[in-house]
Amino acid sequence: MITILAVGRLKDSRISALTEEFLVRVNRFYRVEIQEAKDNESLLKRLDKSSAFIVSCDERGKEFSSVEFSQFISQKSLGGDILFVIGDENGLPEEIKKKSHLLLAFSRMTFLHEMARLFLAEQLYRAFTIMKGMEYHK
Image (cartoon, rainbow, N blue to C red):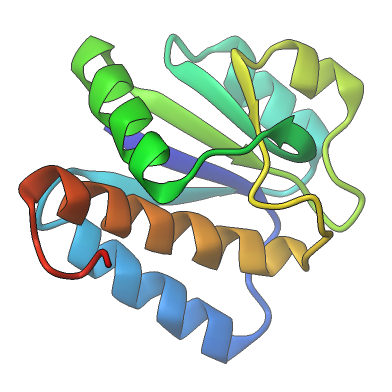
């Protein structure tokens, strides 16, 4: 299973609807869900209980092409659960980053934390279409 653990709720209904659309699509291939934490302390407690491969989204993290990300997801999903962590508007505290197995950057640019959920959901869908040889990825 892949879990996206994020601080707070999505406030923009347009971003929420697009994120949900990609989650519906990707769930045809693999179980992916979003869980929300009220704050960083709650995030940290959940990480302490997790045995998943933890990937924290951070602008200073490793960047992947979509094909490389697909290969990463394919490899890691065979080994167990994957937990993606998305912080609030202030990012993630160092304590959470240190518990991560990987820091992942979508870009060196800074985006709204709400958009990170959308980007991640879309890239997960793209990753699985690449694995399946579908036409979505070009």
